[in-house]
Image (cartoon, rainbow, N blue to C red; front, side, top):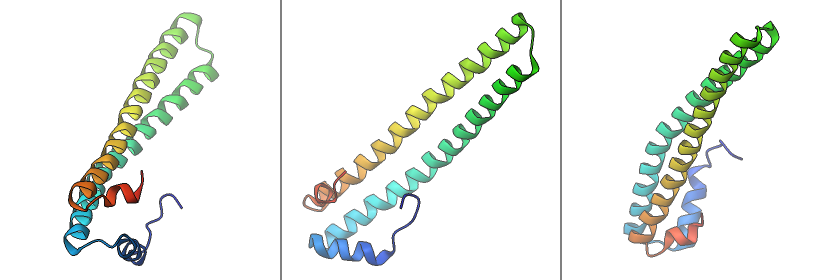
Length: 122
């Protein structure tokens, strides 16, 4: 179900099950809105990083397939390896940003919704 957006009716049902007051529901909606806004940027960055990493890996395969001489091939492979390593590090930071955004939603719901973030889980 990842990537699919649940219907609004689901969240209405969840809010009723949590017995949120109007103010609590408003706080949770605001926290969720901030999460979605932040995640749009995080996911756009992730797509760009993954595209660059894929390009780097394809370039490495081309280098291997063209049979560069030991010296020039080693330099190109080292550069591509370093680039791939740096991109992997950026991806780790991106995933960390996603986790932090999820925590902000939980904190927002916990502070304004009487523990609704705890009830929502991680």
